[in-house]
Image 1 (cartoon, rainbow, N blue to C red):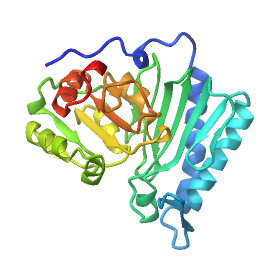
Image 2 (tube, rainbow, N blue to C red; image 1 turned 180 degrees about the horizontal axis):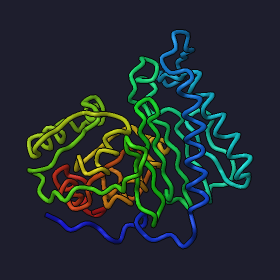
Image 3 (cartoon, helix red, strand yellow; image 1 turned 135 degrees about the vertical axis):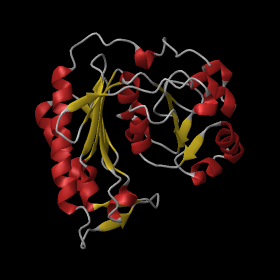
Length: 279
């Protein structure tokens, strides 16, 4: 077992007060929930194909427009990066939005989809909100303020990763076999599945939240963009875990992600044959 890393730039304390920004992020999530739920499982939902052959619905577009309008009113000096409408404004303080992470589920009426809202300051994700209104769940975090979720009785609960310290006892989510196959790492996935206690492909945002709740020890993904994972970084970190790319670098722009309970991060990097220089 390897001790958790303590020198990650993403884990360094933030010298400032994020309270107002976190409250805004939560209000943005409320606004997004109202738009997405109004069209969820609608028989006449408009669905189109984007140039990359991925789907986009009217709800994706309307949700991002609503969030951009609120941010323009509340934080006119901040930049915005969204999945559907690209980048605008300065990047020193940048709101990063995925209006519906899991559009394929949304358009099929499957409730496993999430609105992701992040605030990155000087390139470091400092605030993250993940809202799953179809299931009545939400997770949020800000640097130095802990990671939290809602409970069925309306209270809040602080999140914490598991204390598992052996790969053989770990439960992991690999997202999808196709992702690993597309990047030529099927052998790595098989080696991972043989080394751990349990493996499942839960998919999209949910497994990262399960990790932050202490129910998984590993989540890895390929083919991700900044808006897919920026909101997840502070939630995982504030829950006591670690979040990097598949080679151990602090990046949301490299196209891959690796989240763990922290204790096993270096061990998983070694198991996957990732770059030793980045551990």
